[in-house]
Length: 181
Image (cartoon, rainbow, N blue to C red; front, side, top):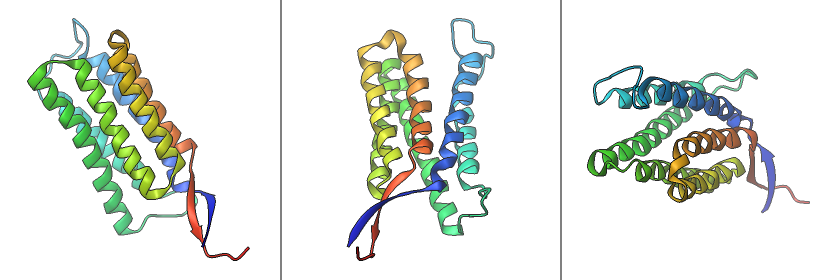
Protein backbone atom coordinates (compact mmCIF):
# COMPACT_ATOMS: atom_id res chain seq x y z
CA UNK A 1 0.00 0.00 0.00
CA UNK A 2 1.28 3.44 -0.93
CA UNK A 3 0.66 6.72 0.78
CA UNK A 4 0.23 10.09 -0.85
CA UNK A 5 -0.53 13.62 0.20
CA UNK A 6 -3.83 15.12 -0.88
CA UNK A 7 -5.62 18.37 -0.18
CA UNK A 8 -8.71 18.14 2.01
CA UNK A 9 -10.85 21.06 0.83
CA UNK A 10 -13.35 20.30 3.59
CA UNK A 11 -10.88 21.87 6.02
CA UNK A 12 -11.11 25.26 4.28
CA UNK A 13 -13.99 26.29 6.55
CA UNK A 14 -11.53 26.45 9.46
CA UNK A 15 -10.25 29.72 7.99
CA UNK A 16 -13.70 31.10 8.79
CA UNK A 17 -13.55 29.54 12.24
CA UNK A 18 -10.32 31.45 12.88
CA UNK A 19 -12.04 34.70 11.97
CA UNK A 20 -15.11 33.72 14.00
CA UNK A 21 -12.97 33.02 17.05
CA UNK A 22 -11.14 36.31 16.57
CA UNK A 23 -14.49 38.14 16.49
CA UNK A 24 -15.83 36.33 19.59
CA UNK A 25 -12.60 36.73 21.57
CA UNK A 26 -12.25 40.44 20.97
CA UNK A 27 -15.99 41.07 21.41
CA UNK A 28 -15.69 39.35 24.80
CA UNK A 29 -12.68 41.56 25.58
CA UNK A 30 -14.59 44.72 24.66
CA UNK A 31 -17.71 43.76 26.61
CA UNK A 32 -16.56 41.93 29.73
CA UNK A 33 -12.88 42.66 30.46
CA UNK A 34 -10.99 45.36 32.24
CA UNK A 35 -11.34 47.24 35.44
CA UNK A 36 -14.52 48.85 34.07
CA UNK A 37 -16.27 46.34 31.81
CA UNK A 38 -18.83 47.79 29.40
CA UNK A 39 -21.33 45.08 30.39
CA UNK A 40 -21.80 43.92 33.97
CA UNK A 41 -23.25 40.48 33.46
CA UNK A 42 -24.34 37.62 35.70
CA UNK A 43 -21.62 35.04 36.45
CA UNK A 44 -22.49 32.50 33.76
CA UNK A 45 -22.97 34.96 30.89
CA UNK A 46 -19.54 34.27 29.46
CA UNK A 47 -20.24 30.53 29.38
CA UNK A 48 -23.41 31.25 27.42
CA UNK A 49 -21.41 33.59 25.18
CA UNK A 50 -18.93 30.79 24.39
CA UNK A 51 -21.81 28.36 23.98
CA UNK A 52 -22.97 30.63 21.17
CA UNK A 53 -19.47 30.30 19.72
CA UNK A 54 -19.85 26.49 19.76
CA UNK A 55 -23.18 26.81 17.91
CA UNK A 56 -21.64 29.21 15.36
CA UNK A 57 -18.66 26.87 15.01
CA UNK A 58 -20.97 23.94 14.29
CA UNK A 59 -22.86 25.99 11.70
CA UNK A 60 -19.66 27.09 9.93
CA UNK A 61 -18.17 23.61 9.62
CA UNK A 62 -21.38 21.77 8.72
CA UNK A 63 -22.91 24.20 6.22
CA UNK A 64 -23.06 23.16 2.55
CA UNK A 65 -19.88 23.91 0.64
CA UNK A 66 -19.87 26.23 -2.42
CA UNK A 67 -18.60 23.39 -4.63
CA UNK A 68 -21.75 21.41 -3.84
CA UNK A 69 -19.94 18.92 -1.63
CA UNK A 70 -22.33 18.54 1.29
CA UNK A 71 -21.65 16.51 4.40
CA UNK A 72 -23.76 13.43 5.00
CA UNK A 73 -25.84 13.16 8.16
CA UNK A 74 -23.28 11.09 10.07
CA UNK A 75 -20.49 13.58 9.27
CA UNK A 76 -22.68 16.47 10.44
CA UNK A 77 -23.32 14.68 13.73
CA UNK A 78 -19.61 13.90 14.06
CA UNK A 79 -18.61 17.53 13.46
CA UNK A 80 -21.31 18.79 15.84
CA UNK A 81 -20.17 16.44 18.61
CA UNK A 82 -16.52 17.39 18.07
CA UNK A 83 -17.08 21.15 17.96
CA UNK A 84 -19.41 21.26 20.94
CA UNK A 85 -17.51 18.75 23.10
CA UNK A 86 -14.10 20.32 22.48
CA UNK A 87 -15.47 23.79 23.19
CA UNK A 88 -17.25 22.58 26.34
CA UNK A 89 -14.18 20.70 27.58
CA UNK A 90 -11.74 23.52 26.89
CA UNK A 91 -13.89 26.40 28.10
CA UNK A 92 -15.69 24.42 30.84
CA UNK A 93 -12.53 23.04 32.44
CA UNK A 94 -10.96 26.48 32.25
CA UNK A 95 -14.02 27.97 33.95
CA UNK A 96 -13.90 25.34 36.72
CA UNK A 97 -10.21 26.04 37.33
CA UNK A 98 -10.98 29.75 37.55
CA UNK A 99 -13.77 29.16 40.07
CA UNK A 100 -11.50 27.00 42.21
CA UNK A 101 -8.12 28.74 41.98
CA UNK A 102 -8.80 32.27 40.65
CA UNK A 103 -5.56 31.80 38.66
CA UNK A 104 -6.26 33.27 35.22
CA UNK A 105 -2.80 32.37 33.91
CA UNK A 106 -3.37 28.71 34.73
CA UNK A 107 -6.80 28.92 33.07
CA UNK A 108 -5.41 30.35 29.86
CA UNK A 109 -2.64 27.76 29.75
CA UNK A 110 -5.19 24.99 30.40
CA UNK A 111 -7.40 26.29 27.59
CA UNK A 112 -4.52 26.23 25.11
CA UNK A 113 -3.22 22.85 26.27
CA UNK A 114 -6.75 21.37 25.98
CA UNK A 115 -7.07 22.66 22.44
CA UNK A 116 -3.57 21.38 21.68
CA UNK A 117 -4.47 17.92 22.90
CA UNK A 118 -7.68 17.91 20.83
CA UNK A 119 -5.71 19.08 17.80
CA UNK A 120 -3.16 16.31 18.26
CA UNK A 121 -5.91 13.70 18.49
CA UNK A 122 -7.77 14.95 15.41
CA UNK A 123 -4.49 15.41 13.52
CA UNK A 124 -3.37 11.89 14.38
CA UNK A 125 -6.71 10.36 13.40
CA UNK A 126 -6.96 12.23 10.09
CA UNK A 127 -3.24 12.52 9.27
CA UNK A 128 -3.99 16.20 8.64
CA UNK A 129 -1.00 18.54 8.67
CA UNK A 130 -3.09 21.62 9.59
CA UNK A 131 -4.45 20.03 12.76
CA UNK A 132 -0.97 18.96 13.83
CA UNK A 133 0.45 22.44 13.21
CA UNK A 134 -2.47 24.03 15.06
CA UNK A 135 -1.86 21.70 18.00
CA UNK A 136 1.79 22.76 18.13
CA UNK A 137 0.71 26.42 17.93
CA UNK A 138 -1.73 25.96 20.83
CA UNK A 139 0.72 24.02 22.99
CA UNK A 140 3.39 26.63 22.28
CA UNK A 141 0.88 29.34 23.15
CA UNK A 142 0.12 27.62 26.46
CA UNK A 143 3.81 27.44 27.31
CA UNK A 144 4.22 31.10 26.34
CA UNK A 145 1.31 32.09 28.59
CA UNK A 146 3.03 30.39 31.52
CA UNK A 147 6.36 31.98 30.60
CA UNK A 148 5.00 35.51 29.90
CA UNK A 149 1.84 35.92 32.00
CA UNK A 150 1.84 39.71 31.57
CA UNK A 151 1.02 39.26 27.86
CA UNK A 152 -1.28 36.25 28.22
CA UNK A 153 -4.43 37.86 26.84
CA UNK A 154 -2.66 38.63 23.57
CA UNK A 155 -1.07 35.19 23.32
CA UNK A 156 -4.35 33.37 23.99
CA UNK A 157 -6.26 35.28 21.32
CA UNK A 158 -3.47 35.11 18.77
CA UNK A 159 -2.59 31.44 19.33
CA UNK A 160 -6.17 30.21 19.07
CA UNK A 161 -7.01 32.29 16.01
CA UNK A 162 -3.73 31.39 14.26
CA UNK A 163 -4.28 27.71 15.09
CA UNK A 164 -7.68 27.66 13.42
CA UNK A 165 -6.31 29.54 10.41
CA UNK A 166 -3.50 26.96 10.15
CA UNK A 167 -6.09 24.19 9.95
CA UNK A 168 -7.84 25.96 7.10
CA UNK A 169 -4.65 26.99 5.31
CA UNK A 170 -2.70 23.70 5.62
CA UNK A 171 -5.31 21.27 4.34
CA UNK A 172 -2.86 18.56 3.31
CA UNK A 173 -3.41 15.09 4.71
CA UNK A 174 -1.81 11.70 4.19
CA UNK A 175 -4.06 9.06 2.63
CA UNK A 176 -3.59 5.44 1.69
CA UNK A 177 -3.53 4.69 -1.99
CA UNK A 178 -3.89 1.30 -3.61
CA UNK A 179 -2.24 2.55 -6.79
CA UNK A 180 0.61 0.41 -8.06
CA UNK A 181 3.39 2.72 -9.15
